[in-house]
Length: 288
Image 1 (cartoon, rainbow, N blue to C red):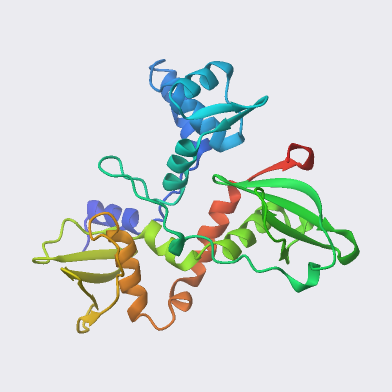
Image 2: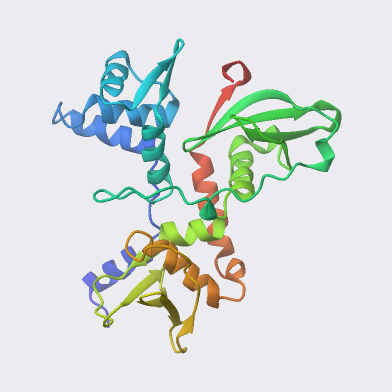
């Protein structure tokens, strides 16, 4: 029979993990500042405001410019590449607090940039800018086809969307996430836990995804993966560094032995994409 404490621990372990947005962190800072006015710097709060709603106060803007995280482009206040890199890594669960910074890995990023034949001869009319994390997209309307399309704000091909404004902006954002990111890899990497509390022996690391466990063994250039009750299987980790890219390596190892990961984690992946989409912000077309 379980004790009350054990039941509580099990319930906590089974509960879904909270995905915190920049707006959530701003709320937290505001609450803590009521007790400690100096709880967070103008630089940090300004960076979070820019990520959450695209606006920072005059004092925060000045502090961010001094710190090298923002600059003026004409009359527009913009984040520097360094600031965008920090926000990108946090939104992807890939931030390193000390040691060498991780470089952007395109193998785990955008996967869909194929022009849609349906809109090849119909130039969409921009109606809004949609920000998902630190990524901005232009949303265009093709009135003749009664459909929407999107492209990155910096340019590129228009991609057809099946959702419309009537379906809601969260649905549109969720569809864009699924079209532009390898959601299976991203979901696994962002939600798995490296079980550092387990002593698995030399060169072996254990990983857990809501109770689904697997093991990675790395020796020089040799990489192997094992699911519970199965034998070790070799897989290719490419040139990824075992220290800096251990989570990427763990994902590649897992996917190498799963026949259909989408069928296993599909519902959770879709729910995760919807949570990310719920934090998207929409701006009118004249801000593009």
